[in-house]
Length: 322
Image (cartoon, rainbow, N blue to C red):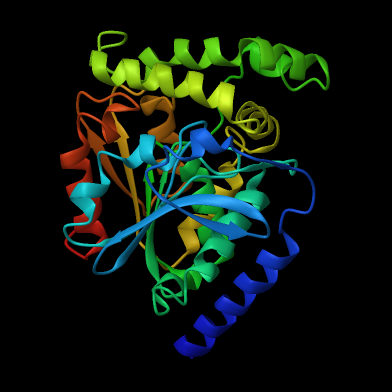
């Protein structure tokens, strides 16, 4: 029966991947910028996806958050995780070094992107990517990972949510304004780089007093993407408009009835996805989940200064050493 469910899940992945494949305009990353990418590329329906697949052992698949590619979100964690596991991380459409598309960056688009990538890599990995794996989602990626796990339960061995989005939070006025057609587009195109840079201190427990090298890298990276990636700002705006960043509580609540273990990792000083209200609400929605609170950590500290400890927590959970 388990094998039949697994075959059914793989067939469903194939069907949904085909139905949700990008069909409209593609926003290509400028070639000179693409050459600086740290990973590999694979074509999915004519759209280049930037990814990394490294390590050995059981598979951990990682989904990054809003506006940050895999190398920025998980670059400090992957060297630790690959000591015990195979790691697959990828850039969503229009983010990092992956081409953008004119399709909406909603839940279906992101779930289908991962489904297609897993299928594409199944031959190379001798079926590893279509067998049950540990799925990790960070911030917006936490909600996306939940969406994938609900769609393909038999492919998820463990689900790990790092400071996940999806619970209800107040939306500021500027957040509502950018959702207005035309006006929102013009406004966001003009101010997006400044908004992103100004948000960086909120991700760290020390505010703007975090590592200067990291700060400079993040600032230059944002500038490069806005200048050399035609789909980057569009992807951000589309995600803010169409992805359930603060409206996925119904989906999160469905995790309570699923068979796979759920671990939530959250920094106790997170201001981006607020820890106090967010962790309390997720515990109400998914009482069976295990909450691992990381002390003295903001949103980005989890994957940067605290990467060794958080990576060990993930690896232990993925490998049954909870």
